[in-house]
Length: 62
Image 1 (cartoon, rainbow, N blue to C red):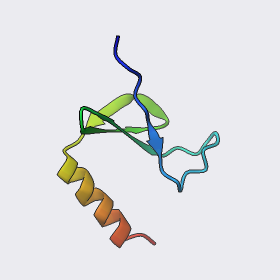
Image 2: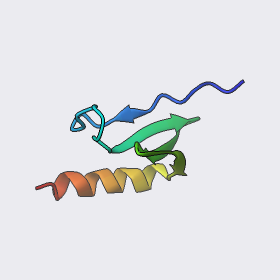
Image 3: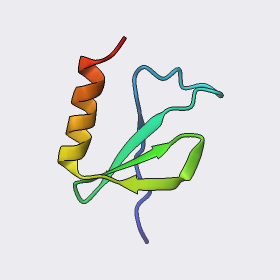
Image 4: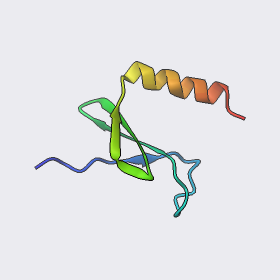
């Protein structure tokens, strides 16, 4: 039986209902992304692609 994924929300998320956000998990070192309001839609991303996205978001945050 596969272990359940440990999804992590951003610390910027309120955590309550209506606070949709992107969640991150990993399987065997491969990052997975999903939107909290569509939890069955999971994307596998390359680690360097995720790092580039996070860097871009940090540099360009309002």
